[in-house]
Length: 256
Image: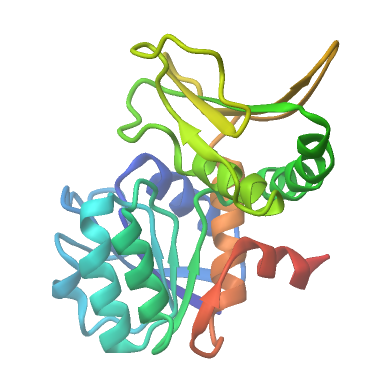
């Protein structure tokens, strides 16, 4: 039985994870942490801050909270040497570097998107970019999410852009807004556009546009359960792992 310390347990994703863990024979939530620490309806204790649950015994920390909370989460994980799955998006470059530093002391898995489909899209988009960019194709990424999402562009869109760019020897720069620019498109830019509307769970399109043809690789999320399923797979994978920095690619490779 793998015991999870769930940070952000009363958020939308935290609630989905809680319900999915109830369906599992191999997982249990040892405790939850949320600034809105209403424990009613929970079958595990809920604390207002992570510092309040230092006595909790858990095998892995699973974080679905906010970027501003990640620093304290990682400080806790390092102190307890507890493997940590960080699913929160909108992290700064400095925070990402801190995660990699923390991975010297404990196992850390970081992914902007936990779904199997998105992680396969990363691979396919990288392979397409390596071929199509050399043949003059422009690259654009369009992401769509619900109107409550705070960060833009999405962490997943940036991860796609980085993956594509790396496949092309990092020669591209990113453009998020063309409204103030009156010039032709730079052939070495990747445009990243964000839509925030309604209850869209998550759509990502990677567009490769050449002369007289367009290839689009798309992923649509219809439910938060796909992210919860991936996060729980990551937690199972990371529990007991030695210190190091891991990604969803490691999880996928271990399962398939």
